[in-house]
Image 1 (cartoon, rainbow, N blue to C red):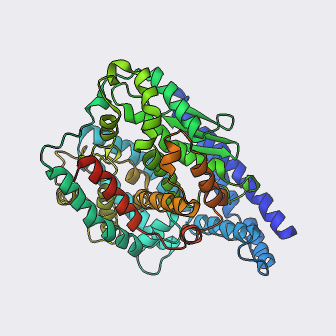
Image 2 (image 1 turned 60 degrees about the vertical axis):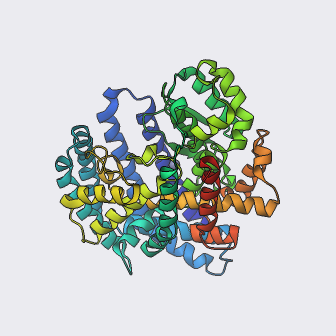
Image 3 (image 1 turned 90 degrees about the vertical axis):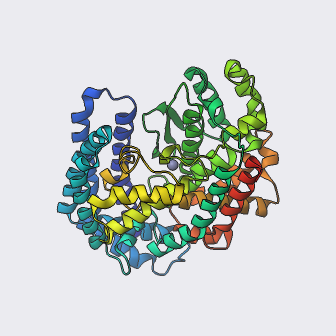
Length: 502
Ligand code: ZN
């Protein structure tokens, strides 16, 4: 169909520019010397500007309108139909934002990032407060420009999680919040609990960590012919094409989980990207359908696989052999408990599986109040601290351990945090559905170092489709239901009741 071909060529061209931008971004965070910063910022701005102009140009809209007419008679489940729908979505998302707003947001967030970093190092929210006020104001304008029917936060959330509404997020947290808080309470109040993560803080030579980590991610299915793993301060995964997906990790001599579980996490993201059907290469259908679904994959491989007893039944001997001085006095069960130790803490990125969602819940509540104008930025730290007390029973001693800890808001990323919890919930829903439909227990395979059955099911049911199905449709298609918190709650309760003998 000629109309589709013309649009596909246009979008492939734009995709190529975006992928080149991603290469520069990856290099910036991995190998670029500090001196390259200013030139790199200029290069990134120039290239992303070109990408944005091409996407929002009237020629693109003309091609989309023609393609929409052409696919009108096609099966809505066809690749062509989905391609045009997603191209329309990308165009609308970009074109709805006035260029002046995009530029203002870019320059304000660049400066805000520096002020946030300085404020955090001085642990002084007042330094960041005027910048956050500016950002909230601009992000509200973004919500207005994108448009919404019920709540302004809907428009922001939709950027990361297409089709999800603020009310859905509220319902999600209502359905897990009280049970998780109850579970945390039981764990904390359990007399004489002896689960700690101290063994993970001993000495672990970073070269050996790399050796072990690469061995594991390769076993999980990361293809080093189609990707690389490098070091970055803030680990991430990025994709340049169907055959080139990069992951990064960070090695800490006295904190084994950073690289070990961080690598498995990023591998989950990478397996998703690598598993998208080859026919979507340089097509807007390439990539993950939402941040939440993407996160469901990183969490699944990191937590359901990487923090499972079965996994360590297979790998613990190897790890012990590599680090005899640090692990010879620790048996498998103790090690398993230590990597699953639960402790209410102040810092989200260091949080365990059980308390993690309480951290995102707090951010969601504050963001929503800020955007809907019920909370003023200057009062946010106090609200933050009170919510930590309410949900986690601990109060941050200062702003650095409180409201200044995350980078997201300084970059304008409001509406993002709930996707972490969506990921947690979906990770278990997919896993249980896979076991049910295949009639297997993956632990039986994982304890033999066999991940193929799980990976193949995920590829066939989720990865291959890329962005073809919106998250809600994908969940329905794969599990026959909407997003369901019950399997997740059951998983947490079962796993942690056993670990803590509740
Ligand atoms: Zn992630």
